[in-house]
Image (cartoon, rainbow, N blue to C red; front, top):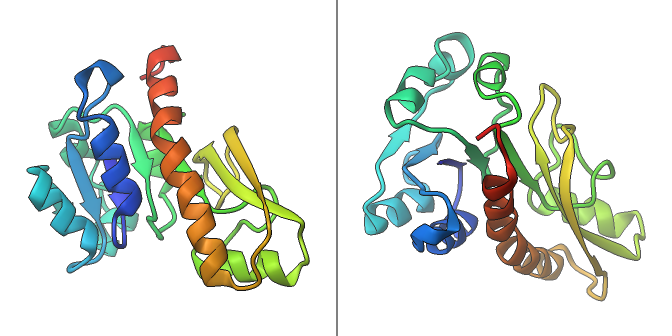
Length: 189
């Protein structure tokens, strides 16, 4: 598996920890990042996992780093706080094998610009009673592909930072185990 991340890498760390037990059915073989200096690169270094830093030109108008992914024998791509839209060429190379984690209950509060605290602020501003996470396959639209799993929680906080912490707990609890279930029940991977 390759984990694509742009930030601190807390979800990447949870995935790495979960799959450090080989009986779970997968191995994080590569960390892909679009931001030099991102925390996820330090995690990869500490864990001994190879990394690549990708640039926009090659990602969107070149080979989308598909040859590099093939070199590492990547079967499944996991987005964990990766903020670039996935190009069509990569989606076609990995059909139904790119998974995203979104910090809200899709189809609400998804789409371009809906990431991080922006999502939580929108949820709070809408006066929602509950929110949660959505794990879904990636297609050519932001936050749109087939939903794999959702977990809900009530909103009992009044600021985006507090809500973010609550959502991170759901992400850390459910993303790795959902990936494991996909690996164990899929003939596509």
